[in-house]
Length: 210
Image (tube, rainbow, N blue to C red; front, side, top):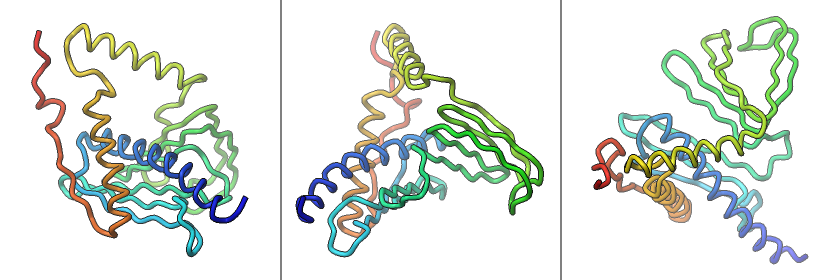
């Protein structure tokens, strides 16, 4: 197909993927911080001059009290990739998570790692904590984690409806995620930082009427 058609089709498909991954990254950050972002600043690149594809996105989320989150989406790099890599750098430790599965055997010595032998295996995802050179596994996804997660979410929804409280993954949370995605695209288009109107936190919302 011609370059023009390829660029348009790539831009359309990548746009949907970028929106989805930005939403996931924003939701993960909000879950870690326990609140929604106050502002968004985003830059994007087609990877090549003159190409209008959503190939590379850098999105910075600003949270209250000077906390930041950075989302990097790279659809061009041909190096080995995983579905999602998460890193939360805290005052005393760094929390890491890798979604997409891994099976690795490390032997020897590498900068910022302890010398020795280490085996890592997770069919679908792994989370761990790093303190200095010490490393501790926190959790590992079981097989068919997507199906298990969906079942857990539906159970939570049924419990919330019966208790007349806000369900997990509610409409409010979906609106907050869409607001971040829209702000990221607006910021990238204008080259400006975009402020978000933060809704009240979940614990400040009134319970549904009985």
